[in-house]
Length: 334
Image 1: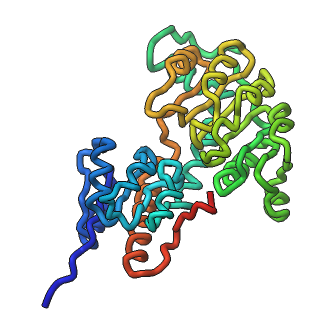
Image 2: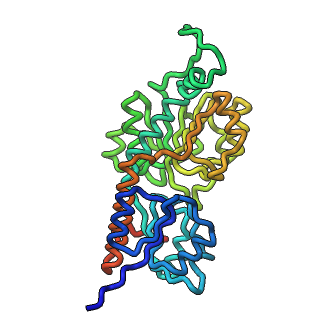
Image 3: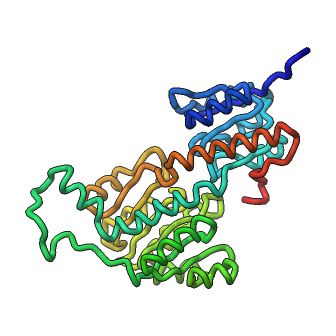
């Protein structure tokens, strides 16, 4: 009796051990155990040989890769919520199914967003560095030293009121912040009432009135530099910007110039426009205590990564069983 051949699944990065073990059991899984990022040619070769590709948000799967004559790929099961690393339109045209891993990272990312909302005005990283880096002697408590700003009673403007934006709003409300938001359309009245949230149809008008601005929208062609040079100049001098979404949403060069000039109060960033490169001027601002920088770790919890892997496996198995994967992404959804 012949044994049905397992589909070849190429995984571009190291995943949690439990997920990799399950993939080996279910598929002919080609793993990346040392976690070295694959080159563009290695990804192109994977597309030519694999039935299913499991990339991460840092792996670019563009139209030239998808449209190779030798492409035998049937599915791209993205290990990540965002799919801006994949040309979904080209994949759809080629008959390749694309899936992602939504919903599992909401709480983790919202936690980190709230951490930055607290850390920036209260100068937490700057204060910690005084004790750990030994740049200056700490003489003890003083009534006027290391003064930050209270966040209770301040206005928080959330850009993108999806699952993560709403989770941020719930946390922020518990800290006494007033919730405002800009979205493509207002949220349901029951959600707005629960959050005490004020909707702004005009992003420009909201930006000009907020004390803290949190970016929680996806990166799409429509949101590239949504916070453009013009819009960034609308922000109040005392205001802070927090971004745990995608770096491309903000015109980073202009943000740097405004903070350097004292025209924006500061920023808390977990993502960058040209990752993994970080603007050296941002690093200098961080050393000066003007910004707080994190290395894209908003969703970095063990629980979250395992749940992401489980979603990838469910999507692949559902597809291979000739059913519609639960997390299928279509061009019309972007």
